[in-house]
Length: 144
Image 1 (cartoon, rainbow, N blue to C red):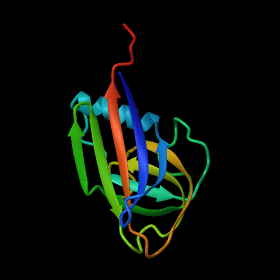
Image 2: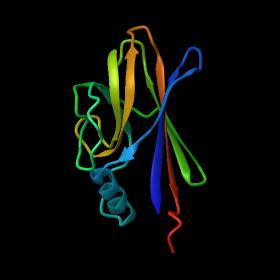
Image 3: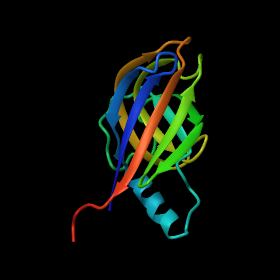
C-alpha cells in the first residue's frame, strides 16, 4: 500500500489554482496511520499549518521547519473511493506572509505531523482569502 498527497492553494474569490504540489509523508505520519489502523491511536489529520522554510523535506521531520504563520482546522473532508479531500480556509488576515511550506497535523498546536510539502514562494496578503485543498490517496503499490 502507498499513500500520496497533492496540495493545492486556491484563491477563494477567483477559484484560480495558485500552487499545486505533491507532499511527502514523514515517518511520524506513517507511524500514526499504522497506529490508527491498529486501534492504538486516535490521531487523525485535522489541521493545515503554513510556514516560512524552504528546507528540503526529510523523513524525520515532526514539525514545520520555519516559523509557523498559521494553523487552521479543516472546514471539510470528503471521501471518494480511496481518496479524501481535506479543505481548509485561510481567511483574510490569517496566515499573512510568505509561505514556503505547509503541513498536515493532528492538533491545533504541536500534534503529529502527517505530511509536509514545499509550496514554493507564495505571498499571502492580508486581504487574500485562500483555500488549501489537500487530497490524500491510498492505493496498492503493485507489489505482490
